[in-house]
Length: 335
Image (cartoon, rainbow, N blue to C red; front, side, top):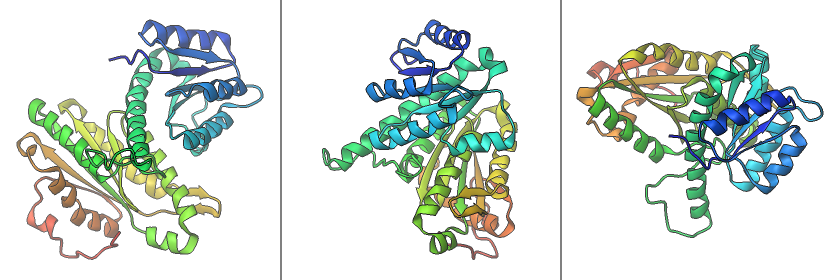
């Protein structure tokens, strides 16, 4: 369903391109779409009215799209707000993509596929932006002392912008309910940073926070917009996926998440850094969809330790077999 009042800003110095995006979004039912032709105008607009979705061209005279993204992210931090940023670009090299993620970009649209991809990407972006801003509002309410606690125990992590373990449990419960009613499967991934203690001890919390931010961007980019990502603890992430029978090949993309986090160095203020990530996935079928989310989440601990040792993407069916729940070598990083 289209969010009629979702504030969307298009930033493009090419009149034809900007006019097309505004027209297409308006015809689709979005009633709060505006455009500017420069990054400077966009910042002035956002100062008066924060937006939920920013569609920005990479190459513009004066302030380019990446610099605009950096400044919007700074404003988001100041305002306790989340802007979903979609970069419109013809660049597709790995170096260019990594540079854009480093500036806070959430998604890309290839200029040559703008007509095909615009509406699906914006629809997915609106869902994520609504969720993130709801979490931020709840967390701000808690921080300001206006209520004793969030009724669901959900908090948002200030570094990654992701919901906490309670958020993951609730989203997992929703996915299990969907699986129970419609069939298909639920895939629950747990990811842990095996060398987190070493990084923190050697480089400090500031450098570690920049690593968490980059890992979050990579995970969110590589999974589907309808999947949920959470930060469970200092060194743990989770991804919750519901898949139907026609989407089983998506597992290849999830394996690429593991490979991307392990084989691409992260740029920090002290240079490029290797991060070692273990990944364990549990597959829950319809017959097991009434399992408690907390049991499933705890069930990833043993296979995750195996992943730390093997360096591989470890996948198991739920419920775990005895040898998977109690591997011969249970030792591993405790994080």
